[in-house]
Amino acid sequence: MINYIAGLKSSIGMKFVVTVISLLTFLILISYGFSAWYMIHSMQEKMREDYEGVLSFTAKQIEKYENDLRQYAIIIAADKDLQKELIDKKISEAQSVKRSKNIYSILREYELLRNDCVCIELVLWNGDVYTSDASNLNSLHSVGDDSWFRQMMEQKQKRSFSGAHELIARNVCYNDIITYACNFGNYYTNQESVGEILLHINQASFESLVYESSYEFSWCAILNGSGEILAESGEKTSEIREYMDSANDKKEDGLKITEGKNGYFLFGQLKNDLRLIMFMPDSRLHNEGKNIFLFFLLLFLVSLPISSIVVIFISRQLINPITALTNAARKISEGHLDVHLHSENTDEIGTLTEIFNGMVVSLEKQMRDLMVAERERADLQMSILMAQINPHFIYNTLNSAIYLSKAGETQKAEQLLKLFIQLLQNNMKSGIDGIITTLGEEIKDIETYVELQQIRYPGRFKMDIQADEILYSYAMPRLILQPLIENALNHGVLSKDFGVIVLTVYKRDNYFHILLEDDGEGMDECKIQEIMKKKEKRRHTSEIHSISIENICHRLSLFYKDAYQFEVESEVEKGTVIKISFPLEY
Image (tube, rainbow, N blue to C red; front, side):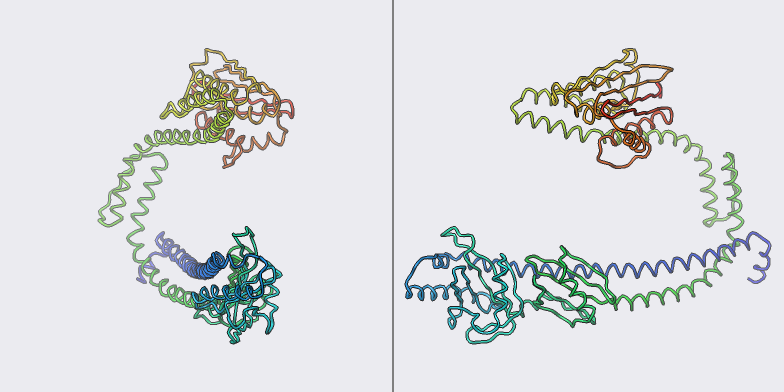
């Protein structure tokens, strides 16, 4: 191999080997570096997607639980016996005691339906309080700190959660109770709100909804609208506390992910002002990224010398055939198609030589076919461009027919639809007839279109067509004039009480010359320059001006290349003139 390398010092083979090894080294380094970056980036994105999925799933679980509580409260409030008992009327003290016992029995039955419900309480706006606790039929807030209760009553929201608090029920003191409050009414008296239902729920039920991660320093918490933590898992770090302080000062809709110093903060604004906050550490990403980097570094150190040895040996088999192919390709590029190579190799180089010879034979045929294919592509593109004109016109016409029908002018609506159908039959022709028309047919379509628009806008405009009938038999692209007349109508004369549109078509020097004039509102110079710029560069837009002019100019360029002209002249409050010229033969 040393002798082979020495023999290549002054040959193209040596240059080939050195160049390939250098390029190979660079490509391997770049590809491995990019692959490592891409894998780390993909893993990071995958981790973010996993975190988003965890946040979304946990949020749905919390919303489902809140919805269960709401449905539970609705079932209680809809109890017909309870509704009858809550009718506000004057009763004796004995009847009041009986009412309390009846309500207690009803609430007690519902309380037993849920294991997580410690007690149910009704707080009426008239001051009455009823509970499902027989030991305390009047109120559960007479002992301990009831600031949570006063805060909920001051908010008077339709639904809300309190923070964790103490509660004495059945002579048992609970330290971890979260209260769910919900307004309810009375359908016997048609009152939308007579008080609130308070569902006192064990905080452990909320803790079962909180996501728990096996990763170190992960954290998750559910907060109510006041920023109080209803349940959490994991320990709060100083970074988490700082984020909590900023999160309590603002409200964001939907699910948000924010990158922190040591991980990702996931924030979800849930229904009823509940919030879900998670912190997911990125320690896993750092460990995986380090392993990926070391793997690709080792792979680079192993693959480079092996690749260099393979290049040296393969170059001896590749250089001569490749040189011959290069010389033959150069001759073909100069226009010589009589090139023929001979190769005794039976490997891929020999196959490539045979393919090259076949390519030379078929090249001339392909060049002929290319012209036909180019024409077919232009026709297809023409059909696509024409299809862009019709939708907004169809939409406006059908809306007008609906309006006339509703207004009782059925004859006008019928005439409008007949003209519309006639236009569709002409404009939706297939094949070459859908692309090419004659000036006579184009003017006939314009007359139909104008008659249709005069039904929509009676007495608002006049259309004058001046064209030499000798030109009626000449071919031209379909739908060149109608969109321009539509623009002149919608963006010109209809801005006034009455306007006139004049179409003039004549022949000069074997060219069609078309003038379209209107006395509408006109345009300033900036608007004209904007339209002419869009004419040169097609792009998607919802403006009728842009679609029509871009579409028309692009179709004219497909037919006539650079042999057409399109000019716009306008003056504010005086009108607009559009000048078009293109050859009689394309």
